[in-house]
Amino acid sequence: MPLISHPNLIVGIETAEDAGVYKLTEDLAIVLTLDFFTPIVDDPYTFGQVAAANSLSDVYAMGGKPIVAMNIICFPIGKMGISILQDILRGGLDKMREAAVLLVGGHSVEDNELKYGLSVTGTIHPEKVLTNKGARAGDKLILTKPLGTGIINTALKGGLAHEHSVAESINCMTALNKKAAELMTEVEVHACTDITGFGLLGHACEMVEDQDVGMVIYSSTVPILPGTEDLAQMGLIPGGTIRNRDFRIPMIERATEISDEQLLILFDAQTSGGLLISVPERDAQSLLERLHQEGVEAAAIVGEVVEQPKGKIVIG
Image (cartoon, rainbow, N blue to C red; front, side, top):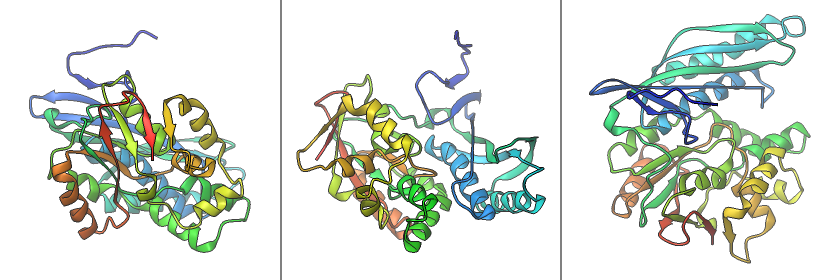
């Protein structure tokens, strides 16, 4: 479809970014995003927390500060008690309170399938917007959360996930990317995105697609939730993860020792995943140390940006 352009539109929908950015004044822009989905956990309160954290993450990925949000609710009023909706909204509200975000309204419709999420507006300086493009050769790549939520959630639906794995997955999904977003503003950052439905490799492919750089991913340093590898070997792989692999595999070069299961974990469709930050090598270690000091314990350097092969991801 023909898109509507405007000189104040800094980021639109043309380049698969995490959020849109519109300049209001020379020193103020707004960041806009929207996300909602069906439950991925059984507990309504936890689902509300996960959905809210996931929606807020897109603003953090752009380098922005979320300030206000609106609820998006689809609820089967004839099939579920209203107390379930109350618990979902309470979970979302508590996560917004943690993020210092104001709930200013929302909209609800009756639907046969429960869905919940947020429309979020944030602020940022127009010259400080981070996009998923701009990574430079020599940069190090920092990932702030472990992978595996998609595989663990699939196993949970089949009653095959270990209790510890589920607990760690929930902790991961409900954790805000707020602290990581704040800390990365202390150093020079060339590109950033959050790892969600396309998986680590899918989002990494977006960062190098049609660019003059490629990436090397250090498979041995990528943080992975406990139990994920065993579940992957059992074949408990989400359909979205397989689609990610099938779509992006032409952009992937992997070492012979990387198994099919390891590749699928790197493509695993995440919910409320971490930030993938492309930062100059000189700043990478100091940022990593600051992340660890401030409680982002799983953060790790998982790769680097290289000149060759352009537009490819090499897994070593």
